[in-house]
Image (tube, rainbow, N blue to C red; front, side, top):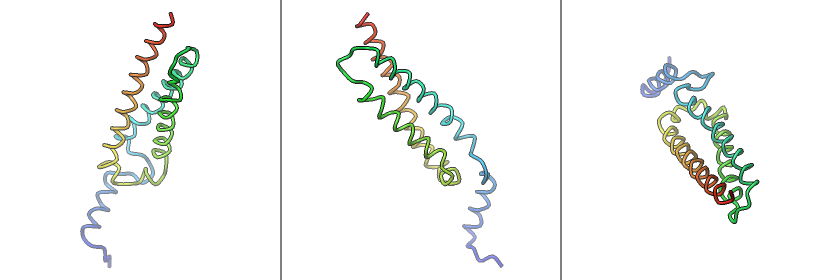
Length: 123
């Protein structure tokens, strides 16, 4: 006879119904798994472009390197087996990851503006 409280039985049933124990939840992961590499590539490309410019501000050390470290930490969390099996990540984690993506996207956009300004200034 199973002695689990009824609430735990219902929670376990919902978990099995909505989450596979072997894979990621495509609904959530698809955006992160495509955006993080895209943003990382954009930052690495900008790092190279900024290194070719003679600017007073070291944008690579000031913004690009910290943003790349942040992306690497998010990728580490996304690929950890513990995280991929957590039920709460769909309820709570999505909001946190979404705010990270908004933050990263906005920083990449602003760095692109700075890069364009610096290119025009040196032209």
